[in-house]
Image (cartoon, rainbow, N blue to C red; front, side):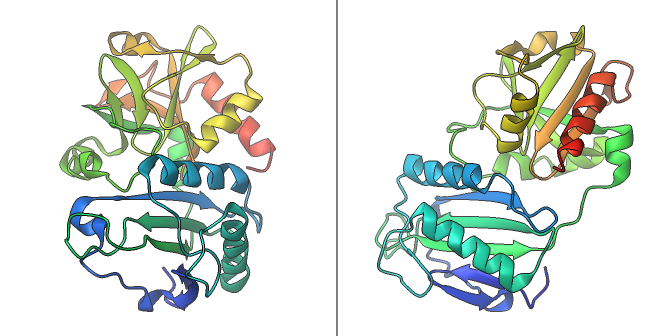
Length: 281
């Protein structure tokens, strides 16, 4: 993070080092908060409307009222138009042509340390972005697996406890993410999953956050079969890839050291990756 970058915090643009939040905030006390994450690409911010809709849907489902409506106005509700205006203001101020935005909305400071007594805290970080190593696209990546389904997958919450606590397992398998499942394959902690069998592409239908990058894949691949996939059939698939804001389209070649297909990025995965890049994404 460049310390000179400006951030948005409750109606003001302030330098990154000055952004501080009190320990009484309900995100600290009760894990009550939502977020979203998206990127600028070559000076543009693609799919900003989709990311905005998802953020506001998360706030609605979490019952967090989005106060802090415009720059220097802490008395009105945040609207989608006001939010996108702030994003463009930050983009112009910080000049991060390929940077990223992390939006955090917390439950606010609490007098009781347990219940909502104040207004939400609304902050936006605009940070530099470093593309994952080129080898991860060329050779593919590894996942670990964990039996878990997020209780409210349509709400993009700040609670990543079940990912962070697996850090030793991540290191053991040199993995970049975790495959969440119950009896069915669901999602990765930061990505949607696609699987390929006999040249047919599948993606889980339920128990997932419906990602914005996933939406783009479905728009260019109309024949994808959106249906729940039993976990016991997992190793019958020929290929697997992930779709996410942070990694775009990335082939997955193994889970906990067990190969997917022949353990190399497959033909379909490479074609989807290329189609994504051809559109300048």
